Image (spheres, rainbow over the protein chains, first blue to last red):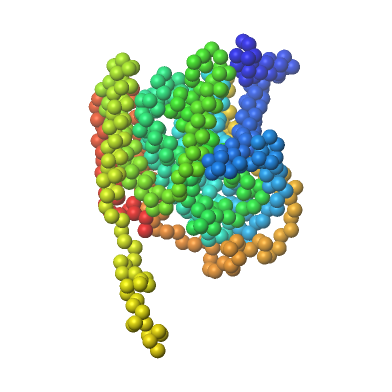
Length: 408
Length: 118
């Protein structure tokens, strides 16, 4: 096995041999390998955030016709490093009456819940942290741990506005979990497994081609799950003071920031894995190192689209956001599951080209139908707020002669 | 071969350990000069009025109930989705009606106004 074909497995095997030769039992060597692998993966995910912050600021800057960070290092690439060093030396201000345990554990939970998703993502043909048979369920479950962190942050801060922000965040996150899981049923259905590796291996045809409608719902719901614009109500500065993290300072605040950016990238990673074929691409089985490259390209493409979302769309109002979830996405995702289950069984034994054509047609019909339904619903005039006769000074109702002040 | 859950356990420990260590290190590096005014509850320069553990809007409770129904339903649907390729038509129709009933429930909640943000 050549080093360049599959560097990580190569180094892993070399290290294991080394440890066994020094007299360790194979079990112990494997345990050390596990600890090293997990530590390396988690650390690199954390360090990736530094780069992500730079990418996001630069891209948003360019979209808004600014330079973005451009002072520290080439193209300002060391700006987030400088920011990080600064935030390390900032004081922790713990508010009076804070629930110490909840207050301190919340940022740790927020980051950990995002990091733990990385444990089950297959990065190439040979490199996967843990190939769980319930991998996708695990992703959903640890994703829900993050919600725990937010509500603890809101509760522990001893601040009304933090608590209000946390309530809103939780309402948003748990609501959007529903269409997200339901639309993720489609890849699970066609792959016939919950294992993330299994879902990737089943994608001879990418699932986004088989089920574009489900992919769209999943994408919208995942953007809402990470609290990105246009769903960034949790940090609606003009409505709430700053959301659940108002009382945090220093690196404790920084950890929420890290969790947010990492979650955006992780959601792109999950989307690329279950809908865009993960590490698969030409030659990825023979040369596993190519798998990293393919996964990176796909994830970056999805991440770029979420940044475009953020840069382009204005923020939703909270009632609009809840209505979008419960009145459009949830029924829509349920009907996708209904229709895809029937159609998928009807064309199960047909040749691939025919299957894909049928799926595309069905999805197009579904998307057009939901679009028509939304448009018909929108035809109703919006409810009037306040009365029609507003006491506004107008030229024709204020003739100069009847002005008592002018006549005297 | 060790169980993959061991990796998950180790990874979970490390995932908690990394941010906790970063926060602790920053705690050593940063200045510590607390005073009453600085540590008071932040509210745009105002003094906080009333208790800070406020009552939550009853609407959240309704949303959570609806969420709970759908979450349990997804737990029921996941095994079906995994077995989908081997199932007979009977099972497909079974789930078909299951989802139709759920949609009916959603419609009921909708008509009752449970999904309106007030």
